[in-house]
Image 1 (tube, rainbow, N blue to C red):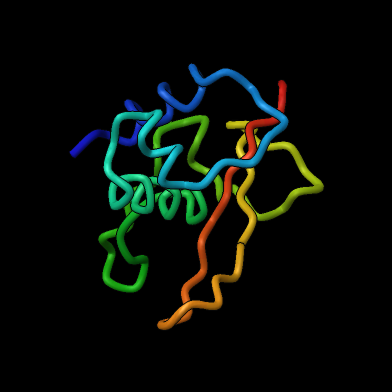
Image 2: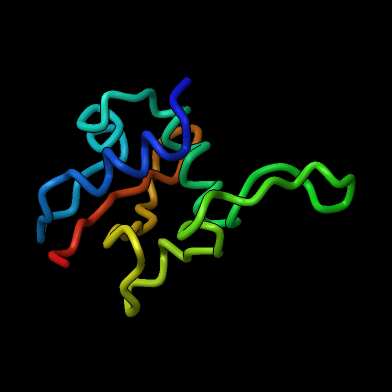
Length: 104
C-alpha cells in the first residue's frame, strides 16, 4: 500500500491533459491499484481518514487537510484533478469514473 503523500506527489507529476481517462487508466499511470486509488480519492474528498464519531479521524498532511470536491468541475483544486460519473447500463449497473487533469 502506498502512502497518501506518495500518491499526491505522483498525481502532481502527471502531465496535464484536456482528455478524460478512466480511473483504471489513472491507477495504471500512477502504478497503484484501483483500490488504493479509491482509498486515496476518499481521503481527498473527506480531508482525511477515519471517523470523527469515534475519535479515529486523522487529517491529511498540509496542504491537503481540507475537503476537496473532485466532482466540482467549475472549480480548480490543489491537484488540478476532476472526476465525473459515467453511468454504465450493464448488469449489474455500475458507475464508472473518468478523470481529467486540467493544465495548471
